[in-house]
Length: 573
Image (cartoon, rainbow, N blue to C red; front, side):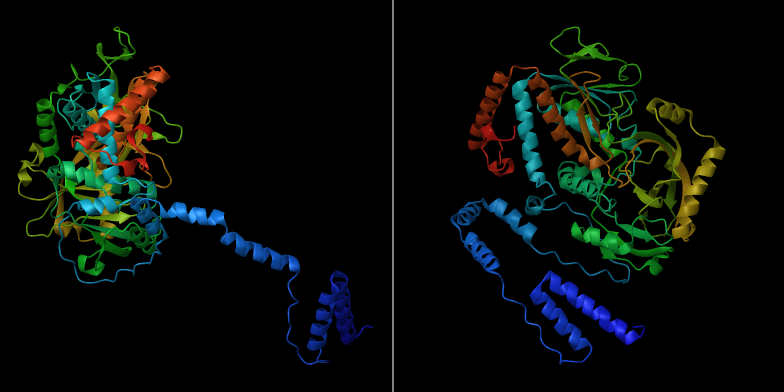
């Protein structure tokens, strides 16, 4: 009993007994396998038992269900779908192929960014199925509805940056009585005049599909309307992926994400440029640069010509009070003046809104400014994805500002850094603005610039051969905390201030079009909420029918497909 052979045979027998207790046929098979192992019988081929009648019956029922009338009806319905829906379905079903990883080559040739054609815009879709054409048409329809609701509405716009100027211009062109307030003496005196000025298409946000979609959706509309305010030559940028362990994403994943969004990339020979501490790089030529000076001049002229009243400076433009209008009727009073609506476009730096899902901080930023040396080739690059530096062209259509007048004729650049340009963070925007007005000491400026340049030279040691630092800019930047680097668009009816008060926030220049559509919808809802429901329903049906009649006469645009194939009176309005 103590021999190993007896023990082995005993264990095999016990295994056979257990198997027999579970199933007689299974036990026989187990015994046969046991005898094969010890060599008593030759190895036999196992033939599985026939399937039970129940399984065979279930297979027959499955085959019959696939050919049942209900399935046929589903196919018939699918065959009646519109061509636009079919195309969208086919695109989603189309298999995706992974593009090959770019190989290093010599320096690529310079390309000029171009807006996509009408066909390309119509074929582009973001995750929710909306196209730039859809958004443009729905915005026009929303303007038509708002004019039908409140044809002589008085609207106050607070903030003279890109969002305030765009919405004021859009509303004033439609005949609304618009007044723009700004506490500074000129437009674009805040963040819109001291930003990176790139019209993003999505390259900068590899970890946020939502932000890339928003950039792509608005980019073409922005270029179609405001392309003349941008520089579209010499705007190439090299995207480097850090290899020092601080990056949140590797090069292969970065390229895979860009390929998934069909964003064009050109390979880059990092050694030819002299880059260090990077695992890979590519060049993008699809993101134009907004001029730092021309938008201010153009918007001021166009706003005045469209009938918008500009109240600028501390005395007239600083909004000190928002309250109920003494005239009643639910109107809102801004510094004693009555308006039907008030729109806050101050980058959330005045009358700050605090959403539940995000935390806002106001950063005092010290941004070094460099000039390209004589005889050197222009260069713009950024290191990703984390607390890294970037260098962006700083373009002026007219003469350079007085503090940079000595460098007239040379290309200027702003040097950004996710970490080191932030001199101090504030929870209150007014404290941040107070610190901006007071300025920084020479020692503080020297320290801040040195920290930024130290990290930049780590990735580009040849910086001093090509550039020289010639000054700096101070600006207030509103930041939203998010682990995925999402840059949200927030449009809200902030009833805590007033039922007719609206706040817009976004950190992307080109998102003005998405913001305008959301703003118009919010204003329509706000006005309708104070109206009896029966009247609202009949009002919208009447407006939709009139709009459709104008479209039939060629006086309006309305795409039924953009409303899910429904007619205007039964659409999502």
